Image (tube, rainbow, N blue to C red):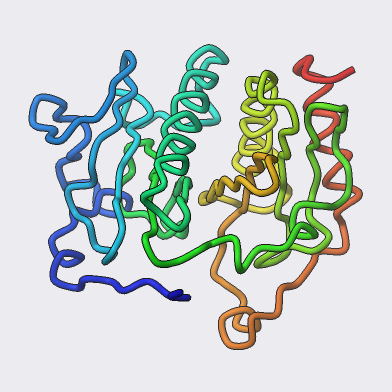
Length: 257
């Protein structure tokens, strides 16, 4: 089994970049010109990626909204729930198809997130030869509790994958997926608007391990050289304080009591 992916450089050179170049036309705004649409629900569109740079994969894109300058932290609760449920459904369908060793479901936002398109979107990628779960440990999803009940666990990692302040939402009851979506949005709102440090970029990564659906919310900054060179994560010493700040935001918005 492979442990790495292979990038097709010639295709990569053709990809449009709007996350930093505001003069480039957004390919997701021109809905009439979109090709290979797989499914659509209102303004949410699921389609094949026009620029499949990763070899031996199926790359798809989930366009979250027709509002190019919007962002997940700004969605109404109704639209947020639609996006997350729509994405999880298609992600699990690909996973259950038996065609892939594993299937990725993730989101990039901001100039440091690794994405190229500003328009809100997610990606679902079927990997034929690589199992992402081989690199993941259950301890990566445990940490300082923000909120927990029998259906969902919202925390900040004490054993993060990359480091500093990674938040996790672990879903144990799929009937409570709206609850998961609400906590994901609250984590993003904290990062972009309430954190004591400037944050403009983040990633969402979804995992399906041992029948638990987890989402890891990771703020993105210039990556620590200790992680780049030695794969050594760092953990912030203020996790309890951050957890309390996020808990207060959840109480203010009626998510928890």
